[in-house]
Image (tube, rainbow, N blue to C red; front, side, top):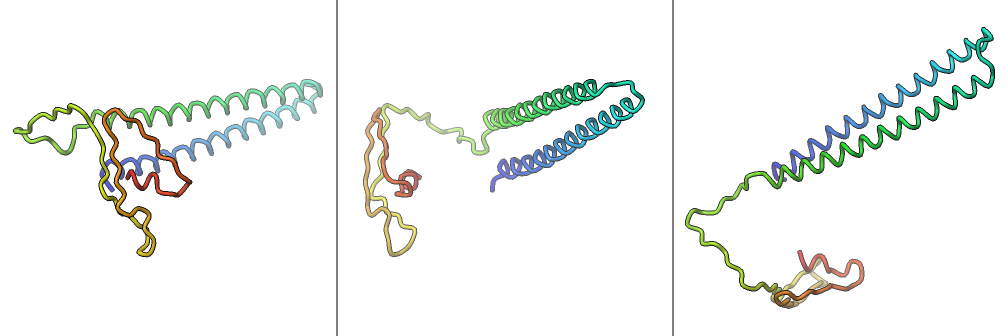
Length: 159
């Protein structure tokens, strides 16, 4: 595994732990808020300072506010995930290549391109060959679609 992949895996694990702690803290905070609100409303109701209607309205409003905050935090998490993916992509794009061209390298001039697979042979097991000396030539600017059943080896052939 490359250094970049190892760094990505480590960052993903840290982010997963952070997300778990964040949602746990958020859940506990919302539960405490609801519990304190209910206890306060019961106390106020016993003192005849709030009616049953006030009690119901306050609980309903608390649920609406809590749900709105929960959705807001979910969207913030989605944004953070997307921002992390974006910043990692930019990092990869701007990173200095590990393999540098030699100073005497001649610039590559491509006049036309084509792709050729010559006598490709491949098998997962010794008994059954998936490809046996298959040859394909795709000319310049030609578009080709590979069609076949799932598991028939389209991706394997290209890779």
